[in-house]
Amino acid sequence: MTTSDDIAAVEVEAANAALYAALEAGDLDALTAVWVSGADADDVRGAVCVHPGWPVLRGRASVLRSYALIMAHTEYIQFFLTDVEVELLGDVALVTCTENILSGGESEEEGELGPLVGGRVVATNLFRRTADGWRLWSHHGSPVLTSGPDEE
Image (cartoon, rainbow, N blue to C red; front, side, top):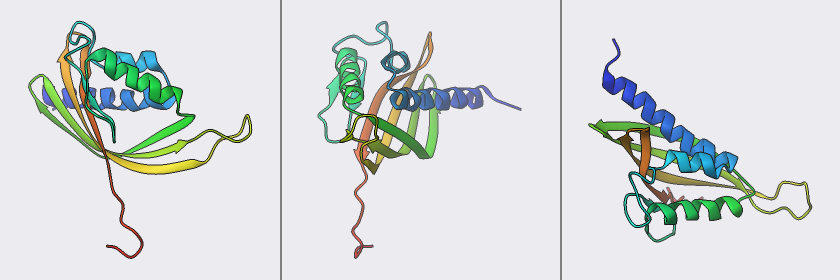
């Protein structure tokens, strides 16, 4: 028998997947739909984002502008999510995961894919249940430091 928490967890996982699908597609409209709306967040409060190496961004406008900049300067990006865990507490859901990222920079020749770079980021995505469904409230990404060949 499926409980309401099981259904909510599936909905949250789908909302989390929609975040990464929007980023991979470079679709700012889809990304905007994933985040809390203007009814739940304004340009100062209600949405928080920390990209790896960036300062804390507060407010819906700053958060969405940061993603627009990232999308404008990223030729190619693909996420392979691992270690996805969903925890629910009422109308709040916490998703932790590892973002295994493959991205490409600018190519030297038009029509060609630039060099590919891999990286890992651990992410914490906090969702709120709203009238429009589960929406991203906060994203925090932190790079995973990898050890060198002689280190364990």
